[in-house]
Length: 476
Image 1 (cartoon, helix red, strand yellow):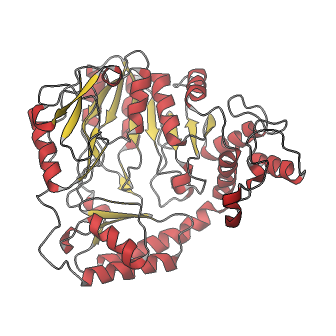
Image 2 (cartoon, rainbow, N blue to C red):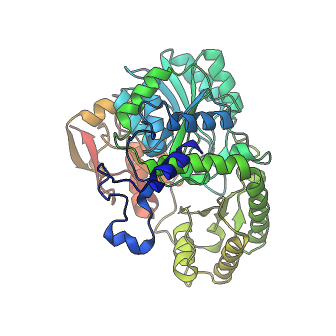
Image 3 (cartoon, rainbow, N blue to C red):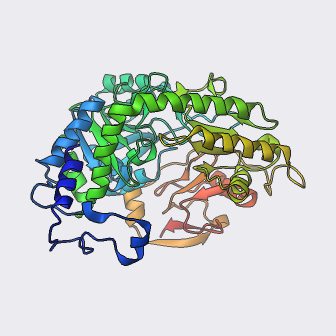
């Protein structure tokens, strides 16, 4: 672990630290009682290299990551996968070129669209029956979009999505090759995929040209630590490096970078063995949950007719809709009554991420807690929604680019009066987990009606300046 070794060597010297950060290598007062050891929290010193111009231990650590994943080169990211996604969009789609992407992309993509001025061309993902979340998109949709948009700078795919489902990424890569367009992949939730044959194949193995992974999510690094791989020469290395220098902090955390170095070492040595145990644990828990009344876990049987190639079984997606409660209520009860905190919940489901550090005793507790909830239906009535969750309207037309909409003067109008105006904000609804309206799109009457129904039903939404959805931001 070249970077970890260099930082430990530095710490052991007991140096007189006349440099930032200002804690001098000692835990700040309020944190001493928690055992924080900041000795590795350093800056660009002799022997510790420079993230923005690496040629020493950081470069060596990045080369080891590239070797492990079979990449042409890899970059350490300390501003999360967000910085990597935005840098890739900026490096490939600047100047108003088209970016073809599904509507269920992460909200970080909006930043890339604003920075680059790219023109988004959205693909409609299919929705998984019974669970209600967005999955993959069809290859015919992609072909149609590329034929109509000759100026496409890149295609962006999500692999896997937040619920662990993967689409036909090999097919997507084949279409991109035929049209000579680079394939960018948000693999934020898939750092671990490469390390076990019973998991879906990882994006680089399936032909992606550039991949971003949130190593802190499933690879064991600290929060905000990520890396970016280039799988081919279709993405210009120098433009990407320039974009990363623009977007990443000029004071990168050495502790975050060291956690990336250590995570790579752990995955290389122990990934297969740990995932062997984790998959047994996950499948056993899924079988037990499926046997509980009113509960069911996501499996291959739910994906057969969709644009989906499989799913990650270490992500337990549990439908609670047959219990007559929402996923939000189930998650609240798991936390309040059992001390179990899950990754996310939506109207119909709860999602538990089983990570490299998850033990069987922890999943056993989850199963017992869900059994208790299954035996105790809600005191009154059925699903705790003030109205049924409405179906998504068609994607509205893009009038101006997200960049122009973001930079334009804006005003607030009542939602009921917004039809025909141009949105200045993004509003996403969960489920299905995708944007209903993007900056620059026309707010159609169907969108207004849908958002009114969302407001009445209590479905979770994200991105709106007014969380109550009484008003929306529009271009002035």
